[in-house]
Length: 330
Length: 287
Ligand SMILES: Nc1ncnc2c1ncn2[C@@H]1O[C@H](COP(=O)(O)OP(=O)(O)O)[C@@H](O)[C@H]1O
Ligand SMILES: [Mg+2]
Image (cartoon, rainbow over all chains, first blue to last red; front, top):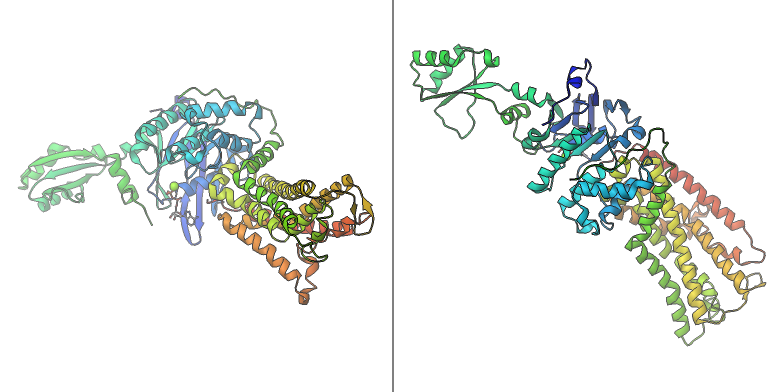
């Protein structure tokens, strides 16, 4: 995983590749994006995580000037959007809401077409750049086929190739691994890492926690149109609360003792052992030591059969942030 | 995955005007199977007419059937003009409706619109290029009918000097030129309809809907043009001058109707173009 370079970390005001303030996008009455303040540092691999329907694609559309914001400010690569769209977009490669191609053209034919729409792209190098981009995503073998005959995974790769037609400062990839097999997913991950190593900022959306965990340095969590958490991945991980888990038939009494010690009782996950008391340790490591807790439990006559202090997994953290699993929200 | 060998654009290099996109638009349009199918269908119209006239034993009575049909047997050069007359009310608007209605809605439907705009193509530039493509198709369509007509006429019928509506006679070369001028007139006639198709296309992501609406409007306009109660409206209908190219078959050529037609079409282009710009320049691209 790529760590931010020391200079970036040390900079007083972190340079941002993407920045929004109070960004709102409404469809009719309904706010698909409900006042978000994104801050994506330059050089980061920023995972934009959220369940389906949480507003990721809509945010990306607004960032790239495809849709207008209902209110709020957007800055991309230090320029105001959508005002500076014409000078910003040539430096941005994007994959938005899946690939979109002419089914009756070949893969290279499609890329030539889209590249010719970019006035900043040199026609003289077009053929070579298309070939290189296809090579990068492993599609050279399918160059002669019409896109109509491509599988979803091949189209997704072609979409990535389109984003890579020119060297970019920023890549915006909306669920880039959709439709890819595990092998393709791994390739995308290593592609993102190699691009990031070359200094490109990558803004990648996903509804899969594992994916974000494996390739991102930073993460922003969307839930029902709101950005509920944002920051370096490591920071978010350590912000997770520790839990005390007591295995006992006297769960109620145990809860009382834990509460007296200043712990906050937590719900036992559905379907797990009923003879269990859980509590969240406030203040992380600063809470009472485990041996103190056990002693207090035993002193009160709680039959302790098992005791553990668990770090909340990142997954628990996200479930608690989004208030739901990674299911579709209406 | 291999290393990135692409080179950045040298700093200070100004963006090109972007003729590439127009070239690409024309190449995508004219390499498309659908475009060829429509042009072939149009090319078949004069062939059908000529063959039918050739095979029928009875001579066509003067004044019966489409304009100039009765003259074909005497002079093959009339096949082209007759075919154009036959194609103007329905076949040409049908194909132009397909191309013009598809301009923006078709890209939206395929999901390519967002990638063109992210390139960035520029919304105004994309509208202009799309319209230019539709215009090119109008020209290709009329020329296809005229060329196919000229060819089949020369093959199936005697060819000789043509007697014009004014009574003057012109040679074969000159009459071919006149056919081309008429094709130009009809191309101009279709520019307003193309602009209407472009406008409708900015309102939807369903190309078939935009195509159908454009074609229906072309029929409605012609129906209204035939209702005497609405004669105040007639000069404003985009189809009003569609069949008014008889003046081009006089000696010397009378350009009045050509001018009136061009002015009317320019008006439609200006109005529909402005509305399409207003709609498309700040439309949310959610396809
Ligand atoms: N064109 C649209 N019209 C109305 N509502 C929309 C439109 N596109 C998206 N939405 C709504 O906005 C919300 C966010 O959608 P989206 O940004 O696509 O979510 P995600 O990409 O996170 O899955 C959803 O509730 C969706 O129903
Ligand atoms: Mg999405």
